[in-house]
Length: 270
Image (cartoon, rainbow, N blue to C red; front, side, top):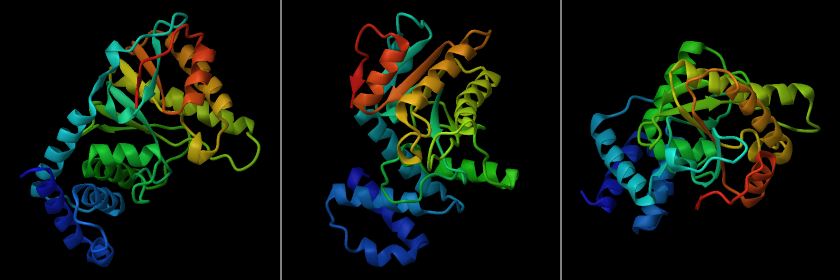
């Protein structure tokens, strides 16, 4: 199959599974870009039900080809900051990073974002990883039997991501002023991810800007907590040799560079 054939095949299976979406699907144009957006939308709304091997084979072929087209960025090659030899700042798409683990800012259900093509990091990571990621998260949450508390961490495979693993953590949602509990929970997100990574002998971890954006934690305060928590953790003996603060927007890049005393601009790949 070529790419458009793969996309149409996957869409047909998902629409057979979820016939309620068939009327909306007919409104999508037939060109490759529109059909790919339809596929992402259907993957986003699909519940964690059993996955067909034939579907997964085609999905994995499509996503792995897209991964290579986007270009994989090797975490080991990213320059560290002068003042912190184990910390790097990198601006770009976290789903391109080949690190031992990338961190997903999840919600309490831990199943990914169900809003079609939403711009959040949760949606981006699940969309690039494939439906196996939602399935793996569902298994963890079914075993846990309750929503994920703030400040904890879970580990799954990365599937079609360049990263070997995904660390899922739920940060505090800010609806007014930032409280001490909010600060402690955010610090716990970073600490829990690092502890879990170290338990598995991982050496490189890439953090997104947890709790900012959709969760409204002020970016400068969140970055201060992130840097302090990570630098404190790295002072002790650990398997972790590199922590990457992944940013997407210029203001976050500048905040982290100022906090870390970076003396040169980090590599940028949009």
